[in-house]
Image: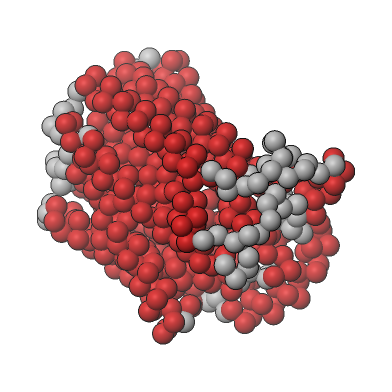
Length: 469
């Protein structure tokens, strides 16, 4: 049952609620950018270990379904959403701070080559990032449910659009914060000097995130009487997004069009994020950029993405349509990846920054149109289920992107001639990402919205008979 009436959200309240999403964007830059670079370039972690450990944050994404059901059925103090948001935020802020000493301890074990302790340290690192992902899921799932609780169907597109933009703003702000706060580390390569500076920085960020989350959720949910146990259970079971992984797979394979679009989303997301584990190290090793400067690459990408989202929403999609705009976005992403690959031959920092901005615009256009397509390809009678399946595709791709990106980097170092900058290994990652983006475009060409609705509508009754809704 809904925990709050639907009084609507004013623009000011929507922006305030979006502060939480901005905090998630800020932390994403730190984890997917700065820590990647520290582990790869300063601590010499194997790429597969970097990508694999960070991927555990996405591997636990299916827990979102469980956390959503728990927040529906078990209110705390009469509130179904905000207590879970705050508890999860406290957990992931604590884990974010603990990640710094653990990363540097694993770095010391790698240097010492102590195999039993190293294996334990690697397992602890993967476990910490898995717990971090669970905490993110515990807070973000009830948060999105709170957005739905507080908005009508007519208000929701505006609220979701603003909150999505706040996520991008958080990415930009996070990159700028890193650039300003860690400028004193320029030229420093000694881990003993880097660790305390990073620990202090992460502690400040974690404290700020928690305070901003308190501000974002203050008085956003009024307490209501808890449902009776039987009613709560019935409400949880009756939710259409209460779907297991097995049931989700039944829907994915129910028609060719669903499988096509699911596969497109996986490849599209991989085409955007396969370079994530190595991007800042690319700037460090090939372009000679310090920690503060490589963090700015995410700012260029984030500003470009925000511009692309607005450009697509206000001008491109209304003129071209959703499917043609999605195809245009995929083509622009492929061109951007080719430029990102080629600019490494010049080692020009301004060129790299310009390419990252262009890549962001392409990503914004592609993401906006892909989100619109997701809504078009979501049948009203099973909306929660379809959204859950599309979300599963993106979470799976983000996890695979970290593992495959790091693994390709290691493979490139092994099989390709080693240049002084290590460019060939990075080039392999970017080339494979370019191929993936082109494959996503091929699949998108085969998606037919009308056929999707016809085929899926006919098979939905059969699928839902398997308790899918």
